[in-house]
Length: 481
Image (cartoon, rainbow, N blue to C red; front, side, top):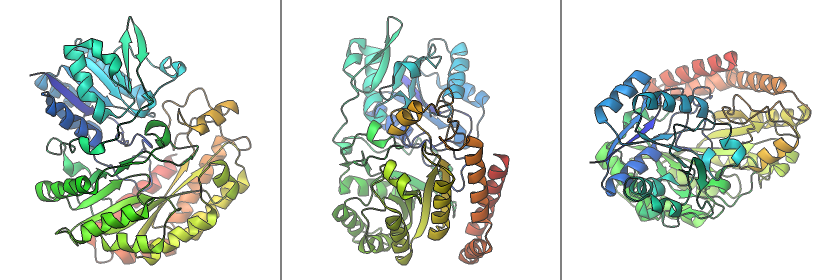
């Protein structure tokens, strides 16, 4: 039987399955690693088409390159698909090179958002001589057809959307303009192959599954990849399909905590309420806990209360900035007042709040940064991440930063904490990095914040232990950068 290996390579922790953000977990404030659903989806699709599958997340398991090579010798795959990120692309390609030195006939597929309809200049920055295919589209719909075409009929490659393949030594792009409508058609991620114990709820360290709720986003934020790689049309899975996957996780794998992956979880109030009512009327009522992302607009008190009743314990908001000018120029579609109101409503509903902020947009000066700092302290979220705006390929921010001459050579190999820009029109990158470090430390070292956390964790030994762990990681990361 033909075998396909699906891997996250050895290295630092990154959200390789999150094509939108590709977060640097190792350098983050409080982010935890999410499940490798992209590999799980690929495994399920490949098995449906008759392939044997080997799957392993080497980075999260802390395994070495030697372990990877030993596994490849043992499983002897015919094809290997590696999930990459914008920040790790160069080290990922080095891993591929070392693999191909031993497994010369192995077909190598790289999957990642950076390959979504890429410009020629991007590909020219990379040594792709050891790579056979690039997937920039929805890999869960693609990898099975790609494997079949590669092994059985390569003339069908041109009809597979969202990929690049080699023809006469040159890369050929297929159609990147269409997205799959029926998300229920994808089989659930093959969690029997995934090491579910690696992916944990950050405070309690219980197993946490990621459940994809929808794809696409109708918003116009200039810094976000979602409308580019997933389309502006919002595509929801059916409530029945989502609930069936939650039930499978609970009954088959003993998972009781969930991250519901959707950039727009609360954008449709009727859908959100119906989803919560489904949980509340089911045998899982009171047995599961979950987290979701939400926009600050639209959101209302009734929806947040319903989410709390259905098991939501934390909601994450992209507040981004305390500057009205930045929110407008970034096309966030929200105001500072709406940021504050959303946080207040969530707290009133009994939910914890995770706030995400961005600084370093091309037009920003010290006043913009101070406005964001003020908002961070005014909202006083339970957890925060303060990122440096990163101009990913395909975003409006990339075009803006490129035109302003702010990109330092390339955006490849960089992330939110290791910015690819030289700064803004008015601030050096060193000033922005210093602002981030001082703000993060001042926020988390406040006596009021520390006492609040200790009070919450006082009778929760596991939570207290993990708060201490995250606190030490936070201080270490900030002081090292």
